Image 1 (spheres, rainbow, N blue to C red):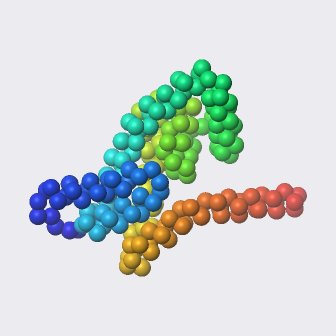
Image 2 (image 1 turned 180 degrees about the vertical axis):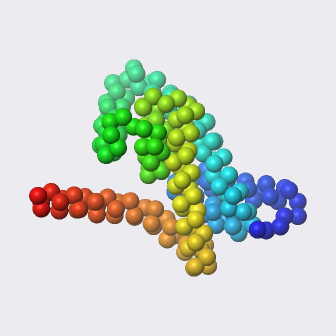
Length: 193
């Protein structure tokens, strides 16, 4: 943990980390975690800042989502989009069951992102508070996994840039690879029956 001469230095460092967490792509997490570490911010502060970024996201995304829903009720194109989105959700969540439990919604938010988690929670009938609690819970689990992985790898490599690039490559490449392996396993099981 680093020492700070004045509280404004702490807030300046915290603001830098929060700004990275507010970037709507996955690279903000490893970069923000390593920036927090380099600025002497404890991992707990880093996690709280990420939680704050999720709360900010909730207050920005919710009105936009509600506006799209409202506009979609009177638009044929939006109706088609909404139907396509529903079918996509059914395909994606088909393995969870037709009635999504809060735990299933948390897993979706963990595996995709909090905005998708909130959208699906809204479709499942959850209001603002419970819907975002579910979405943020899944996203915080994702953050904690990425934060610990980033700090661990950085301790081994000692290079923040290389660590960030490796974590980004894993974030982008691992999910499709897992999907392909699962699909191949399913097809092998089907052909062996």
